[in-house]
Image 1: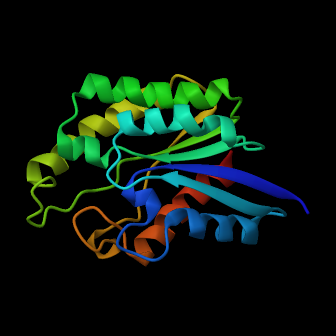
Image 2 (image 1 turned 90 degrees about the horizontal axis):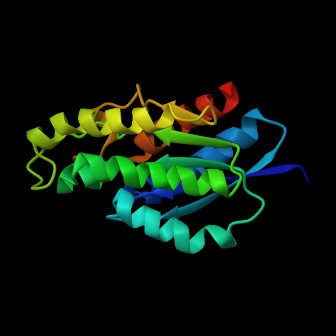
Length: 187
């Protein structure tokens, strides 16, 4: 069998909180349908995580993930909601990337922090939705530091792709998977 492994790391948006599916599940299916490989996504995400939390997790667990040379990252929504200092967010994100590069990952796909739809949630108000652009700019800056890092926008996401202000429904999960698929196949 010809196969490809793909590490997916992040927070509740990667985990698939509030839905039964998750974008890594759809991503494996879509890539298997569009390539000659059987794809396995390894979902190492945790609800509520920030870039700092993910950096600690990755440093503890990267040694047990073998035969894997590509990764998708979707992290930052909780950093925006918690108002993580922007410079620290950027450096933790950079360290996540560096960890993967040192472990010989050949392609790293960095998803934008998806739109936030204020609906009364205490952490995700209008102000947070506006600050999201600053955090995305930090991610874009880090992606420009190495040719093996790819920025992945989620242009198709709209309010009808969410169950609350930040979590995807099944349509949202599929659209995020499709965006990552396009980036992977374009590389």
